[in-house]
Image (tube, rainbow, N blue to C red; front, side, top):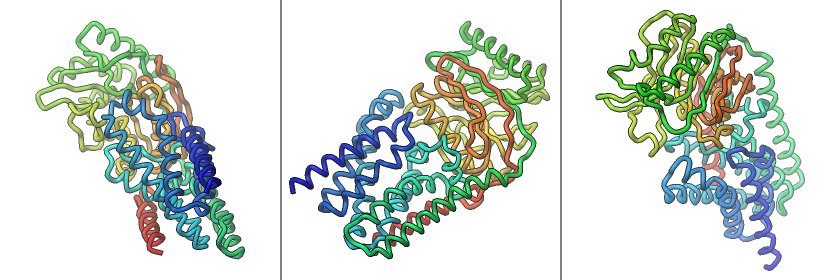
Length: 465
């Protein structure tokens, strides 16, 4: 008994530390692969309640590192954050408890399969109902490894999640007290084949890709503390002139599309065209497309909008943000329509949090989009993580993503998850790049969440078994 208690405490601390390192705003990628291993190895060697409690406690330790981010930066109610942490811990406990049942009974194959599919199913079901979409996923920790993130083009982000849990679950299954050597060997061979197939698919997809005509895009953000600047004030006029100067510089470097951050200015709906005229004039004179993020106020209600100025002097197009940050953007009305650039329908526009929702990116890809432009606004320390969510979203649907955030990152990535150019924008920044566009869509963009639903069904069958 004393030995079990000591082991349980040690595993809670060890896996908790690994989850803390692997689930923060700047995670250590390898920590996520290692974190579940101690939990699953311990599970068949202690009572069920102890195994579940250790798993839940380890996840809770890991999540505490995000407490100040959720409560101070994102300003979520404390009770909601507590519920989120407790719910996540309970989910991880259930996953380990399910695996333990098969580890104890010697069902080596089911024990190896349970954690990957159950964890992916849990994330998928949460994403379906959450106002934050697919934010809550461990998959983004691998965003700087295109050979791993490429799996998302087949399965969505859920395939990466399952892949992350697979090595630990296989290791625990083949070292469990129960089971036969023949089953262990078969599980090892099957797991190796799955990993080789998925990684081979991701790498091969890049090599077989058919590329379309590239796009030269520029991103710029001026250091701007606080919220949107009223454009009719002296501060607003100064900010407009600084951005117009940046636009001219990027146009001189060959950029044909130039994107500014989200909610840069506050504009009046009735006078918006006049207030934003310097950008309209610059678009025509320089022969470029300019995307400006504004907070639009008017009789029809407030909205978070991206205004697109066309080089042909047409009336500007507007995209209204679909997915608003709960609490922080309660004053805004959500939009419903998609927006394609008038001069190049291969390019679509969305705003910041919209990229947390795979379905919206898929809708654009089915409409022929091969590149997404995203004005954004980060919270400083979450710049890496939120930019990588956008990168993975692009991999899923096979689109390049150009995202520029205030107090975050300016990032251009291709359809295969490779970062073409990047800059920290907490003190302002300007980048540009020529991005190749993928001519073909991905299986995930065509088939949707087939893998997520398969994981839900497989989890149910494993639980019944």
